[in-house]
Image 1 (cartoon, rainbow, N blue to C red):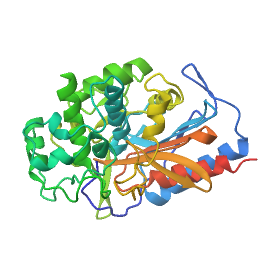
Image 2 (image 1 turned 90 degrees about the horizontal axis):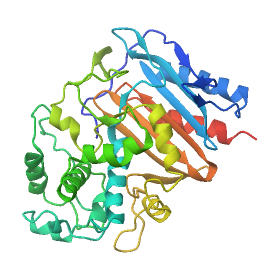
Image 3 (image 1 turned 60 degrees about the vertical axis):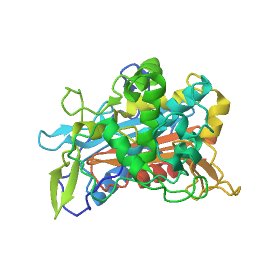
Image 4 (image 1 turned 30 degrees about the vertical axis):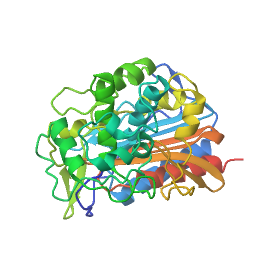
Length: 369
């Protein structure tokens, strides 16, 4: 999901840090493996980068060799109430949530309930004729020809699932399926509806039952601004040099499968750990998700995208990553799986660049001898 509002500049109050890097955190042993100089350098770098980017609050997670080496909160989760960011602070996911949607679909593939090469018309009988050439695999990899939210999309209308599907179906494909790559939030919205049709359950409930609850991800859930959500951060944007609260979005628009989740860095540590195992998916399925999908002509897609993840080489290291942007929040996760290093940054400012922070922090750890 992508924010619709342009960034501006302002000066924010200097922030403080709530650090748990390294200590014992709520029963989690924070490893002492990193050099103190690296840990201190990371903290100073993040503080400086937050000040440069004018970010009110940020949570940073570093996991190395299966151990949490840093879980640290910087700045303010709520500026009005002067509430600090803590490791358990809950942020909105933005498009980082796509990796959970993709995992849910692949779970159903493993169960034989969905086929990756099934045409969409198998599940959407009233869909446009062009959808008969679109496969589930292409939706997962953004190679289906689906578009994105139109410029005139009304984010303040409480769209029903049926209404949103009708809108998606009315938009012609941008290119023949499997012949190009273009990032598509509407493709993942459609995958959420697909999960609902196959299982009979709202995709968010399916995620709770099959992923979040089994992994003990207690704060991770579908967005609801009406519910009481402990440790929820506020999202912000900059308008003409002033810090403003996030724009209001209709409740149903905040429940779609393109990235409408709450989570914390503590929950993402559990998610990261599970991805090194076969608790959720077979290794062969994970490898498929983390391999850039090839187009029909045999060439790799230009997005270097698998299923719910980007895959790149960074300074000779394979990196599986994704970022997110939505309603006053920017997020990033970088997983250097061959090095067993994961860095996550969750921030509460629209147009912030947490991906720059995760990449630089990873380089600091990878650069250690």
